[in-house]
Length: 368
Image (cartoon, rainbow, N blue to C red; front, side, top):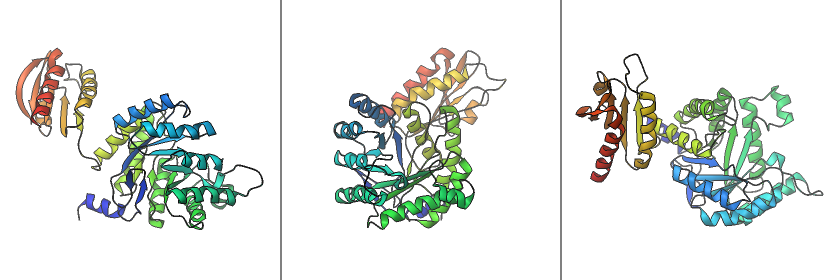
């Protein structure tokens, strides 16, 4: 069995769960998620950001619901977007119910910290949330991270461990299952990459529920991308995960771009333009760094094409290195070569290389 087939075989063990118009689990494609950082009750700003995220390739969007105004705003937001909407709830069970009543396609809660009105027990509050979800067929994402592991488990394990994360999550899942509901998704996240990998390996052996994966609090765009690529790359390669979020301190559009790159790199996504570029060296006599960044930006409007584009800094080795690419450019001293399938099409002045490559992409697009 091929490696990709082994990965799919592992993923088919998870239960299918419908989230709005999309289905996860059961071997369905791994979907990309992100989260808005606008005030959710600012409908115009939130919708505008979601549209940018949709355009970038986001397939499920999550919004924070810290108060009733945010919960009520979901109804208006829902009218303006085309991807499933997830409500992120902490502490107040009434916000979870209100979010579902106003159109949330899924809710994210930690059953261990559901609070609300006095005079009700934690079980009664959770039961009210589950009853509302069951009535509407809305899935619940049980979310636990390394900062929310309860004290009893910290005492049991001595500190936060992969085993503690898994036990905490499965305890919460059992609470909801006892209420006769199993329309569930699980997420267990840590900022510690090795702990996160181990926790996902453990939980994948213990449950059939779909898993939403991510490295929480990964950091800035630069540092967070490395951390997420390493951690999520290992988890995904092992065939674990049904949805993915790259958590970055920055524009959430960058999260979506990074998630797409991770999935494409591992072969879980096809299509789109892949830009490959060589490192700079002493032979480089053009602005390779600037050119590669310009190419990466330019090709985004051709993302409907499935191509590999090479940007090489040396006209000596460039054609050979770019042989596996569909199109490419290789720089020389003040000029460069335009390449197609490793064959030289023509020489081009350095300042015209980007435009020449763009013309070839346009021609390729017309031929498709």
